[in-house]
Image (tube, rainbow, N blue to C red; front, top):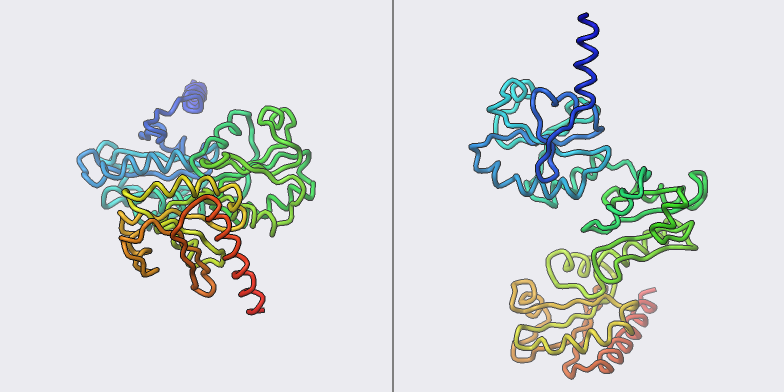
Length: 345
């Protein structure tokens, strides 16, 4: 009788539906162990309802969960005053406290900043083992609609050269969400060629694909090219990419009174987008203002096109802004840039 009762209770636990709120599982003493054992990785938010910092973290935690969670990774939370014994067990002494569990065992406490980017980056590094195989078409559709750049391999077999190259790249670049499938029906539904690596992104043409070159070095360059929109806004992230990189960049410096020049830049995009990085800097904000000061440009001389070479830190200016003028100016600047590279060699 006792054995039957135990078996019945075990069956009920296995079949239970764990409640969730905004993509975060809600834990209790009834489902805590079940959730930790069901998922390979679980990041648990130990919180208190009365805690102001907990209320501040809650939407950040939920937004992070929507970006990271999958069939192996989940985000969860538990109300410590209500389940005090569990919080004591895991030595929670302040709120909120985030702890990562793997295969049912406590691994570590989250040590980073309580921002969405910091949490997402940390979780991806800790949980991403490389590309995971899609178990359903819904999984593929969901990842293709991600708010971040993601990549999916569509192929015929796991032992293929193309997949081995792709998987190796995914293991070395765990910050990029990656998935793969060998199901031809899935590929057909996603309108993907086999074999191919499809990049899904929340900007520009939404997706791009590799069909014939699966060398890791080529994949790396392809991802780098599509990691940002063709027309970038100047902020701290684009500044790092430009000033710490080696690619020439075309800036349009403008303010809210001089933004008519943008339409000419957009008309020129198709002719120059594959040759140079392109960035709009609005001098009404602090980043654009600092850039304007860096180039020594006065507000009265806006709008201004600036072609910048990060290797030599040289730049050229264009004041008369038209579609053809931008195209010709860019091509002339790139000729100078290439000559500089040859001289360096």
